[in-house]
Length: 133
Image (tube, rainbow, N blue to C red):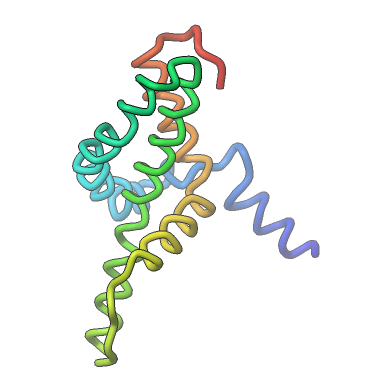
């Protein structure tokens, strides 16, 4: 159990962010910024009618949309890796919605602190400093 706790404190704890590592920032977060920029369109199309209908829950709906957007943007490398490995080892790989969900959940768990900080920045730009996280 102490090995797991040491790994958590070194790599995943609240004070550590993978975005602060320059190599990971260049390899993962820079390409993910383009993907999240593209994902703005479908997330806005889905979330704006919900915000209009449920006006009191606007902040929660926006936060969920941002979590989904950033998780899917960061999971793009996992999807690309699956495609490359299937081509290298020449086995049939069928792309499905379940792979996107699984990879999104993996990215959400691994990059949670970085995603939370990015959402905090987005909400500060949109709503100012008066919103509650």
